[in-house]
Length: 171
Image 1 (cartoon, one colour):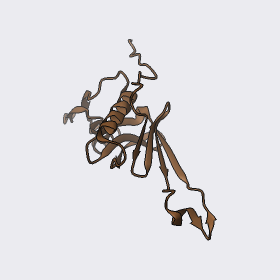
Image 2 (image 1 turned 180 degrees about the vertical axis):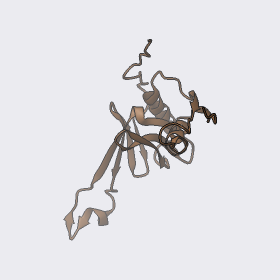
Image 3 (image 1 turned 90 degrees about the vertical axis):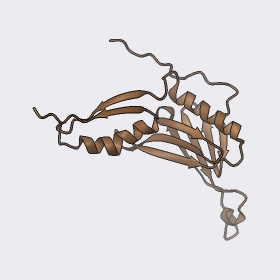
Image 4 (image 1 turned 180 degrees about the horizontal axis):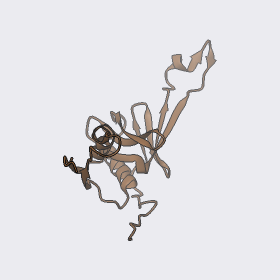
């Protein structure tokens, strides 16, 4: 059986931006995945002091592994990152992050998105096609519900072309 060999780290354009500031968030492309840093605005004096005592601004950080990135797109109004979020052990669900680019130009945002997609997909072709057979008579009988609620949103977020079929034959 032939196995598909993929590089663990796809080649990345050195000129591509690895940091993008959107709203109050900073997005980084690092070795582990897409890192999102959310921090309080340090210019707001009311948030940085309590009873005259300075409170250090807090930050929240999360990392989305590249293999969970389904798609990223940007236009003049918003930056959209779609990814597979782990909702419980072994169970994934479609999640979307929407940001309005403020500081960086549209060209920098587009380049950032292209670099993110390159790191997420590597050498794997994008916009794949799949034929899905849903057997409503197998197992406890929840195949159609699982397909519609859990699986289809992930495939569609990855911009896959889907051909679905539900056989109605009873043996």
